Image 1 (cartoon, helix red, strand yellow):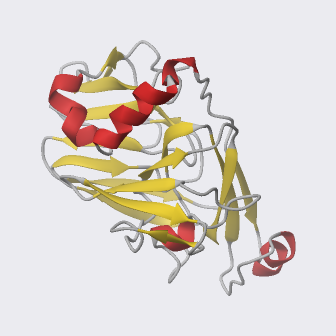
Image 2: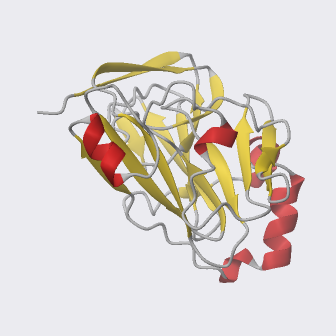
Length: 255
């Protein structure tokens, strides 16, 4: 996989920022995550060319837009950085986005939304049939991302439904740390997807197999990412550290 040679993030400087909470570390120790294989399956994107097509194929979601689709994201047991590239106005909170799990949302499933300094947590309560906690009503826009913890011993499949964004798309990148993702529904590298690297920028890609980050640094003298440009798949988010604020501009059109 491209980027496999990236350095492992030094937890001394990142543990409090890039991991959801102390519970993340405790969970890892108690469940021996080094023994859990968390290979990310290929994420599937199906773009329908009319609202009727999706309304027929999906049991939910009625749209009046011209181009809609859905993305299936397979989440392995444990933690994974997840993103939704589709826009569904009025249905973008954690509670709304993450209820569409094949077979039902597992009790204890958690979503961690990063606010720039810390994480807001939402935990699914099967008795209340809802997500509870400070993160439940956080809005997750396309181009952003969250940590998801799957408490099961088997995969869960989350389906996102919404409008496939087309034309010129602008994703604001704040200075410092943020969780970001591509708003264009195709796999690629940070370079091919148009991420605006600059001197001092870093991308931290969470490796769900090793439960650690791989660090990629932008070298302005080399004009690219070292040790290589990280891959960013559909439905995957990465941690970003920008030396200065910028904008991630992408263009996508469906013929």
